[in-house]
Length: 435
Image (cartoon, rainbow, N blue to C red; front, top):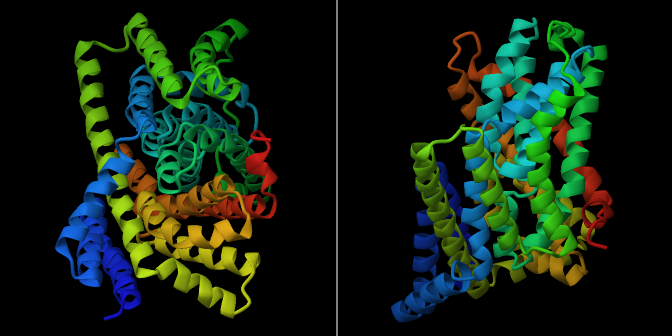
């Protein structure tokens, strides 16, 4: 077999193995290692490339952003800041048709700015938002759909684990990726709110419910008390990065320290909770470390096989310009989103397309935002919509089936696709803060 044939076979093998349930880093690492060995017929070369992949990826200083932001997100979740911001938002939207759904989106957007995890968002708001919406007569599908759709904001609004993973794969600045995600993330949140308003007017049966006037309004003092801590955290983390006062690593450390002090001061976190947060941080960090190492050797395997160059020649031979490349890229991500999780999509697809994007003079930071938004859609689509599974498992309500969760999330997946097209058409949306 030629190197090209081995490269194509390896990519197909990786996708099949992941779909069959093999742990993602093992599928990436083992198949890539064996492919290099077969292409060069040299076991020592494959071993040396594996050593280089480890030293060139996870040994970087900026990798410290992963455990720090992970720990900050876990502390904030345990401190109950998600429920606090939701109460404040619910008070403001209580008289609006679909207002609780809008409040969920707003609270998720703010919560995402300090957690960076769609799984954490889906878990928290499944407990606080869905029961309240159902008590007010909202359609169960709409209730779970709002939570599923807005939970993915944690993947694009910084700090985001997916932006960190992309930054390592594409060798881009974590700080720049975080800043580039602000405007598209807010745009997606606003698009969700507009969509909920439109659904309330055009498809009232799907939304259901009634204005939550039974929710007691909060005074400005109460709203301030519930929102000030999380706003302060956002100002420290993103403000520190934007002004240049803090590096992403320092911002993660500062945010973790402030979040921890707040949790202890409010007595919402004991020593046992602190220990469990440390353990969970270690588990998540080790998993991401393993992913990045496997992705590094996978990228080297693709380079040895010449697969990205071959793909570029095929597209060039068909006179494929920017438009066609992006159509193929988005369709590929949407297809893989029905089979794989977001991290897998980024690790498999990005190394293939980076050599095509760079010669076009396009920003790799912008390309990262396009990639994450496109891969996010997979969180809401069957059969592997992770956010939908988390919501179903968290609710444990027999009245709501997994099918209800997926159908409820469908309109929000469509909104995400519209926002993705806008970001592709207008790159300035993701690059405005950087300029």
